[in-house]
Length: 168
Image (tube, rainbow, N blue to C red):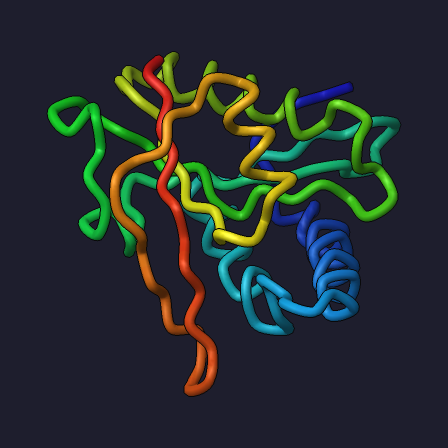
């Protein structure tokens, strides 16, 4: 497997992966992503060198972005509030490739990448009803921040998100 920064040539395959994930989420009773997000961010993520991919045989299996800001950051209380933090966002694993350790591997890559860049902690937000993701973060030693970020996605939907962080 190969882990690297995404390139603009990867964009069609990345968009395909996220669109498949959105379709799968639409079948759930409470989808987290939609036709707009996260696809609207991916081109900028590539342009600003913050989108990473995991490939096997030239096929993208997973992707995430590492950002220096996150809209919900001031809505929760972080344990490591003094250090430099990066935010892990838009973590997606190709539909049909779940429960194969790819998410765990991507968390390790994210931690190593943030640490190599000189950051003190890695943070993320997760929707309160995304129990598989919450269990994954807890299993790997991520700590939940105090508070909840309530993010309005449209006129009818408010997502409640927990903040999680891990020291590097």
